[in-house]
Length: 188
Image (cartoon, rainbow, N blue to C red; front, side, top):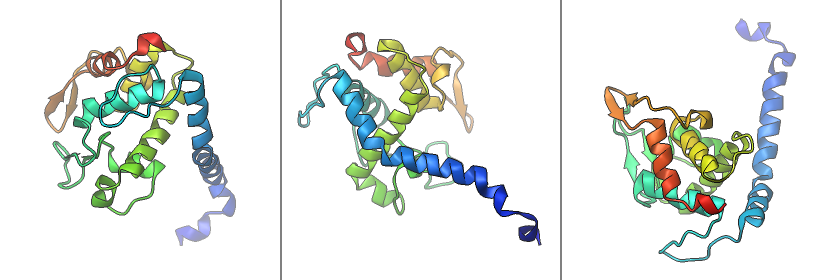
């Protein structure tokens, strides 16, 4: 009965949002290429990373170090009300965030696929950069870290402790400062 009350035009705004989102994802590689070109060459180092002043590389390594100790197979359901659902992989994606940028069938597929984790990182980092309103250098790094931790780059100076299911976590500022400190943001 409710279905009959919804017109085709009701879905028009949603359709437009999805169309724009798909366009963004389709152009993600060219966006990342532009950032790499404007901030230096992508590092080709192996297992030992040397910060090279490249915004994407620096943030990739700093966030991975902060979130999982660089482990693609890390899983943390600490504090999540549903057992088995939690932060996954090298960058500790929540499943709903990861699925915005890559398709995967379950936690094990995501954890065992570094390429998908890196693609999800690229998508989310570029999305966050788009929210930073022209910030540069260490303020950009702190804003991106804030977005990674809280979903909102503008909260980078919040000193309020974070809580999840009765457990206290560091403030957004403490997290943002820690991630920025692992980059070479002063040279961006």
